[in-house]
Image (cartoon, rainbow, N blue to C red; front, side):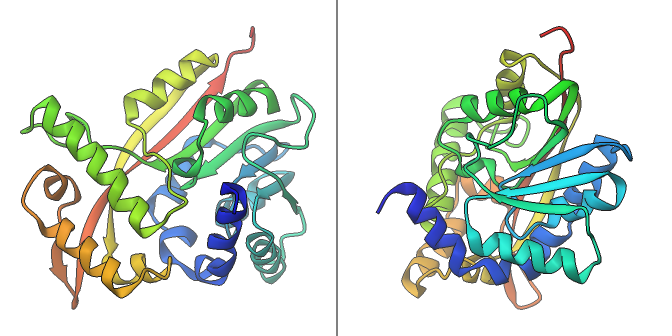
Amino acid sequence: MTRTASVEAQFGLGAAQYATSDVHRAGESLALLVAMAEPKPHWHVLDIATGAGHTALAFAPSVARVVASDLTAEMLAETEKLAHERGLANVATVRAEATRQPFDAGSFDLVTCRLAAHHFRDLPAFVAEVARLLRPGGRLGLVDNVAPDATSLPQYSPVDIAEADRAYDSFERRRDPSHFRVESVARWHELLAEASFGVRGSEVLVKPMAFTPWAERMRVAADVAAELRRDLLAPGPLRAFLMPHERDGDLWFSLRELVLVAEVRRDR
């Protein structure tokens, strides 16, 4: 099975759960992204890797048109269903890969991508595609989990932080095989600068996660879930980064979530 087919299979099975997931349909990062992007009534917006469409639908009331793009047909069906339920007639869907969108250059005023970029194998290609799609002065609105760094683990050495980085990607990948790589805040800023973007605003939020629904959303086998719990609680920099604790009868941990808005240069 190709990686594309694997991703489609993985997320196709869980599409309905993503439609109702509190992590994806709400959360502090979604409201903050909309506020930071400052959408205008005449804007055309593209949401890449839309999932069940929550980001696309959050922008739809404030703009002229939104296209929700995703690789997985089942996710797009959930997007269409939710748009219909909310009476949002300005939302369209298209099936496409993140780095190969079927639109002319300069078609959009805003391109968004939320909680998906850690699945992309070629982030420079993704950022270049966003730059192509945007009109001069257009904006990228990004939300994604970020890797451990000296800000989140100030008590640890660079060697320990690098180990925590590797351990965190392994932790995520064993839960979701389509996970590829979580980048640092610094790396995102580098990638955007290289593609002629200027960052307008950037914030990192701490996002609490309940372990059980986090694992169940990806249908994690019981033995793998037990292994992930053990790794989460093992002493060391990964535990310091994820901050596990018991609450409401479940094991909770925390991720760091980057919310960033960048503007492509008008003179590129």
